[in-house]
Image (cartoon, rainbow, N blue to C red; front, top):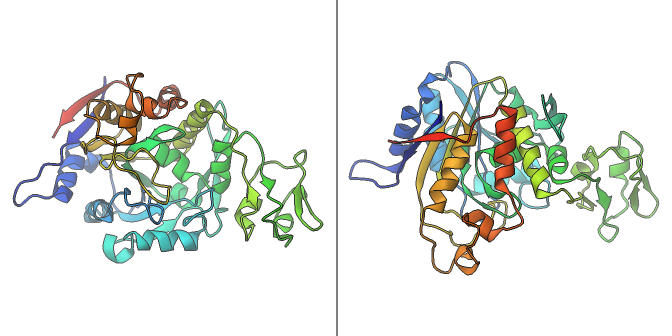
Length: 366
């Protein structure tokens, strides 16, 4: 049977608002079949990089929090620290960014937990059955400790994966800092000697004695295992990850990390196809959308959900002046038109192979 993906548009009438429509959507999609009673529920979101205004409004998160609480669940909003330097590279900065963008306990009705801890080192090693590229995924501990996972995803473009939807938010987003490095890179970190202050903190935290410090730190690539601990502890961000993985392998690793997060426990997914910016919400700013707002989608199948959303975006008119309007649209797919070097279908195909879901879907309008 085809996977069921449920859709609701963004039109409202007097007495109805978008939050009420979101509740109607997820109920129609079967969220009440999940037993939330006394369960810890991780609501995986992206809090948005400070300066970016395309991220999802916290009101949508509060709607899900209230619904889970009504059913006896114990929800929390969560994400993992970023690999790159910015407003979400450690838990303190990450919380500041989340609160700045409106994701506070007072506005959403639940706590915010940065899943991989203060410096991105609090992780669980999860064996990936059938993984081609990842044997043990490094997942933020709080996400793995949860009984249930709900992903609330902003569906938009992405310069490496084509688009970011459920698979990207769950797979890449749930990886610890070392996990993110594993997905992005086949290599090992190196030290930017211009930025290094020679403090030696990286060497003190290296479990394999791969780092020596004279005036500056140096990583012995022959000894380094690529665990990423030095990335987390450097006080001046002088340790830099390699970024040498092909986009196809990156996408496959994201699918394998998603499998690690979801396998063996209840999960449910919502994609918000609004403010479809060409770039990830990890940027400190956002461009105008490439297409008009489409609506909200929900499913138990994250693979079918992403495919349905990509299909829906490709049916929309192109917004004049957008990045999509500026490029040659010759690929039959908007995301490939903007980023011809990407291949979002590689993540979809690999996720199907792993048993995460299916590409064929039945779209049910609510």
